[in-house]
Image 1: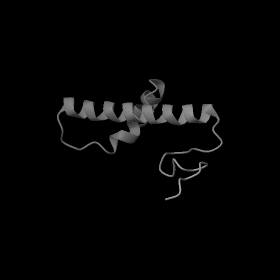
Image 2 (image 1 turned 120 degrees about the horizontal axis):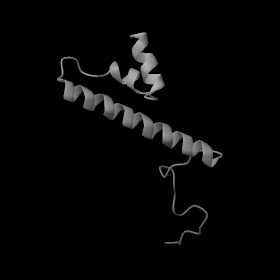
Image 3 (image 1 turned 120 degrees about the vertical axis):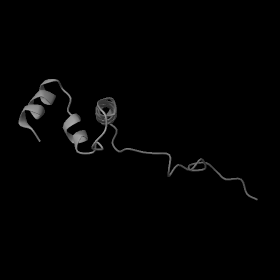
Length: 79
């Protein structure tokens, strides 16, 4: 990639643009190209923000609801 483009993206704090340029479909008109690039930047920023907030929260481990059991720690009724 062009070094000047990388430098400008760093200077403008557009960290996800260089990565997104490799995934943009070629031969698109300028408006579609710009939309694809800006969408990728927005998604990258949201992902980075989520990771940063989880890290700042200081959770000992990340838990999801996939393995959640509503009966865990309670007495199940006998049938």
